[in-house]
Image 1 (cartoon, rainbow, N blue to C red):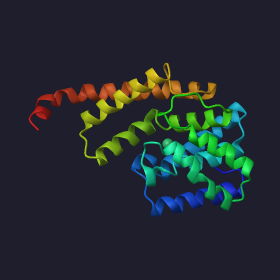
Image 2: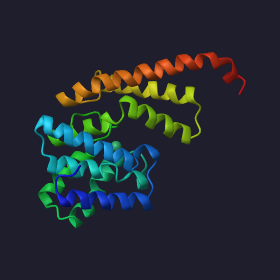
Image 3: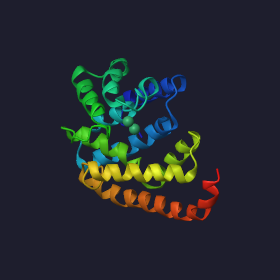
Length: 208
Ligand SMILES: [Fe+2]
Ligand SMILES: [Fe+2]
């Protein structure tokens, strides 16, 4: 999965950090692994610099355990620096990685300025689509104590918000759009399908 030893070193550091400072189950090391996978693939297809996108993917949610979801991209752009320094990254590389991390959140719908930041954004959003996302979101909402129909309604609300904020799909690269199109559609259709199935229990839910 990694192109160079310092990426592996960085990943091990983040893994250890997450073992002590636990992120929520949406942003755990499992999510990081999938985002690294997508970042690598998108970098190859888009000719982006994977020596920037892979460390950015490894570190992109580093601020979640300390600050939660709100503003974690901007905080992460600060928190990533000592990790990178310890793994031998130069100041120039650190700036590029921090820039990508600072722009990866949907809380800031502006298009990232660099190709590497677009790749990180899309890699992260690809893990919010498709079968992996359906499981990821339902598991997170179940852990938070929500019933299935409540979770699905929230998910559909989030999907609508993304569609509105990003004029259709939350992707900036051509490859992200290509891969994301079916995955995004899948997620929305499955949410509606499961919600429809849950309709039969509607009266029972009302009694709770
Ligand atoms: Fe994030
Ligand atoms: Fe993420």
